[in-house]
Length: 368
Image 1 (tube, rainbow, N blue to C red):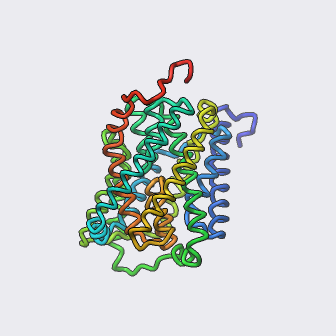
Image 2: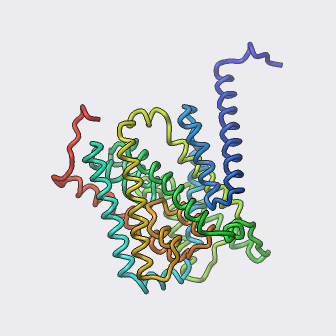
Image 3: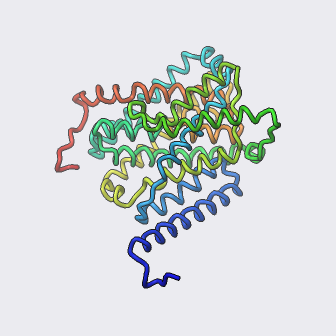
């Protein structure tokens, strides 16, 4: 038997790392379970994100294994695609002018928020714009790193806003969804005839592991399975099937990934930006509420559906809450998906062009 005195520094580091992971998983499970008892639809995501933040700020240096995170992104993409039924295409064609208007207004508000963060907080222009764009937080961070933009600022802005959106939509759905939430979160029964769709759906999600290596497609591990699954689902030829347990674990992994991004070092580095970033989060959420009110003037939707359709958060988060709270999922996903594709495909180009305008505060090296 090896005594404690015989342990090497490497052994002690391994033991400490194992203890950190055990503590993180226990805390995440406790918070997930506690929020589930309170019937929060996004309990898996919110609980694990809080646990990740605690350990991230503590300086544990932990991060989710890349293959596991890419797999979760793949399952998130397939999960979202599951609700991309033919009705979504019909809805999109039925009210496409409103769809374009709301998307354009959302982007305008996001760029305005980025300009405010730049002018008031002296955040460099391109990080301010990318950090304010809604739709897919991970993609914006990847795009920033690929283009040599300060990814720390973009990550802080994106994940701070994502945290605020998660809290907002969770609270709204908690008080607005009622007992339907319990039914939505109950285990799904599936007959033997769904075994093959289940295997195929999981296979599409597993593509996220190798696809995550494609650097020329931002967030390819989620985006490509989402596109493949959406095409199959929207065609009506195949119905995606996923187990509730897989969905819960998927968003638990994503929550941990988000939370562990909040390290003390990154927060200290950009601590001066926090007040204006938090104000921008509030502004973007209020703008989402106003745009949701606009949506209710033209479509027969409830307040929760309207806010989820215009909420400036990541699509996987909004989709999870929409499904769990029995909101009108096709409408929510139609607006969120169109905005997602516009942001990911055209956001970097628009950001580069807008940053050249003479309206921005030019940050010197002394101010960074």
